[in-house]
Amino acid sequence: DAGVIQSPRHEVTEMGQEVTLRCKPISGHNSLFWYRQTMMRGLELLIYFNNNVPIDDSGMPEDRFSAKMPNASFSTLKIQPSEPRDSAVYFCASSLDTRGYTFGSGTRLTVV
Amino acid sequence: GESVGLHLPTLSVQEGDNSIINCAYSNSASDYFIWYKQESGKGPQFIIDIRSNMDKRQGQRVTVLLNKTVKHLSLQIAATQPGDSAVYFCADLSGGYNKLIFGAGTRLAVHP
Image (cartoon, each protein chain N blue to C red):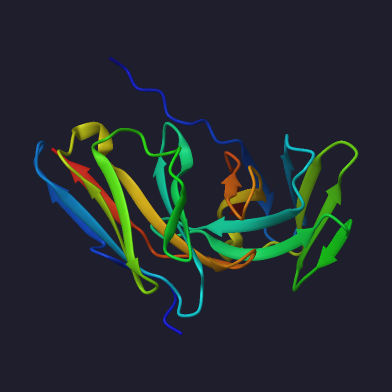
């Protein structure tokens, strides 16, 4: 298995633009997580899906952030409009119930 | 204004020495714990896990100890190597379902 695949690896965008981050979880995993990592706040859980259904989005910072999981093999995290304070590394992770938590390589987002 | 970054505690060790990285957790209901290693520019990588019905688990050069009485977790790395230099995170299943919550992390610096 290729592991959790995220794209793009790096994204630089201007303030106010829409940004879409993508994630392909490990085949067979039923849970998917989006995390954000910054120097200020460390690793924060943004949202968590189980069987493609959002279970807990309490970590999503604002309405500008939205996430979808249209099927078991794909998820997106969208920021619209983006702001400089959204600059961070965004990680996607997947698991099969409570086993095999695996992280992707992350998307480094810079909003200028 | 000046920004203040997350201050990670740093453990500095000599190559070949044993390292012990500590972690405290707050939720007495947590029943599953994972240690992750994160190298610069990469996503967190699974090292070892332990369930609450155990107090010790060993892997290759790593041992995790769990003390549920004081809610403390430690990661021991034997014969530390330069390649072990990274930030180490403990994470626990907290808040229900299989939502993984991370601690702040400890930076391990291995000197030749």
